[in-house]
Length: 176
Image (cartoon, rainbow, N blue to C red; front, side):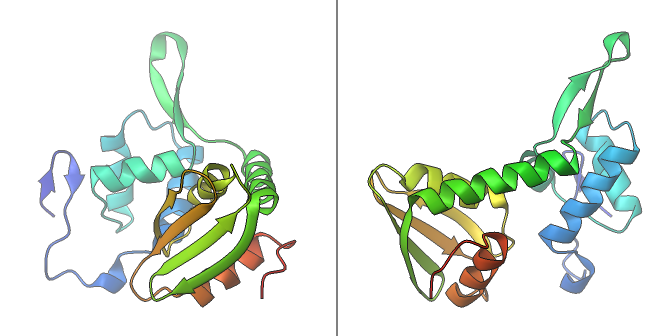
């Protein structure tokens, strides 16, 4: 497979089904980082490639950020990537859910756009909570200056699917 800048590039004839979705890829990356001493993104790209997962360096960087992976020192042996424990990740998700619940007022959508109205001053924390929860179907968020959050969805991912997943992740949400 051709490489560019140390990252694998998908060939045009590669089937989309052979590329795992983000959630599956994140699980594999998490396992690799917990089971191996990974010192560079190039090394991680190689490990993923051995498992049939090809990613660009930019995608891998976003995945590492989403997993809250960071390089930690190992004394004279250099640095390696480390990730928080499952308990830490669960606790963070609980904090994001609390931030969301504290700030949101209502949710509405059309096509690939969701608008979340928030209490005054809560648009940034609500947007950050959504960004940090790492939905496969969310392209990104834009926090208004005060009380609106725009959520851009990927093609084929609906507002109904977003709300359904939001309710699963935030059990206290009573949006209809």
